[in-house]
Amino acid sequence: MSATNGARPEWVAAVNRGDIWPMTEVAQTPFTLDRLAGEAATRLGVQPRDVLARLDDDTLEALGVLLPALEDEARLTILGRWITHRFLNRLLEQRLALDAYVASDPGVLDEQIVEPWFVIGAPRTGTTILYGLLSQDERHRVPEGWEYLRPAPPPALSHDVDTRLALADVELRTPQVVSSGLVSIHEYSGRMPKECLSAMSFAFRSEEFVARYDIPTYEQWLHRVDMRPAYEMHRRVLQVLQRGAPPRRWVLKCPVHLQYLPTLLDVYPDARLSATHRDPLSIIPSVSSLIATMRSAHSDHVDTDAIGRYHLELYSRTLDRFTDQVDSGQLDPARLTHSRHVDFIDDAMAVTRGLYEHFGWELTPQAEAAMTTYLREHSEGGPGGHRYDLASFGLDATEVAQRFARYAERFGVAPATR
Image: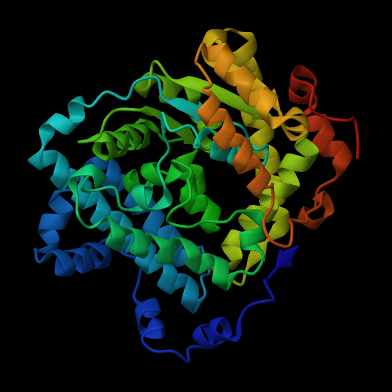
């Protein structure tokens, strides 16, 4: 089934008709490495060859797959191409800024990221509300959206935070005014806690691209490539953000980590992990709805059946592997917690207290009071609610239940059918 988002503002239709200059002219420029490097060089006042010389082989390999896929496969609208050019420009410029900062202050690489706490549940299992709760503990360091988009120089050592915040806020909010319904599924802003996937995008090895675009060549490459460069970039972003500030425990969140736990633990050997679990009959249509809505901000061609099938294959494989890692002891049970979405909905604070107790950490009265206030003011889903079903993505409940039967039984999260 192919779907397009029909509830767009008139200005979006005008842009996509080619009525608004200079968006049309910008959109016509190709996604090539020479063009991307040339634009960055112009803004930085250097030669394109100087930009290319600063990029390592891993980054050049990633761009060599990503850029042709965007040009040849993504079928972007004029507005989608315009947004994507700005996205790529920001990624490359910030990558160069990160590298330049590290070169000017090599000691930043000695910053220790001690016992980072990762929320690693599958999408739509309550990771966002749990992450928001943990952000209320003032002893935690939870990066906001603007910090992931524009991390260099370190916030504690910079005087341009307001400017970076404003730029990030525009970027994060733009898809929400293009694609109706996105805000009800997952709201974004410069001041909200954000998934750490964005830190990996500076290595151009990131599921963020797959979420936004239908680019099968890049998707297939991403699932077979070594992700260590992406996690090393992730750590570098945290080191830069931490520079000049009193160290606090990092609390981070991204469902993608489930796919790469051995690499994550190799880069962060003392990490703590909190897995959230939910009925897969809810996970698959919900995450598929989110991705379809995100892609519709960039393209008129959104294949909902392909999106549903992709997530069925991806998460049945990922969660079976996670079950193996848990049962084999590959994941240290002392450093791993499990919580069910249904229990969190029933009593979120009881679940949260259990997480702290498992790791031997104190949940202070001040933090608990802040969390309780946060719960009163936030609920899952945004304005208007989030509606989805399996049939919209060409999926059958019986097949989904069968594919996830082992995971569901192991963690007690699913009825037999729906």
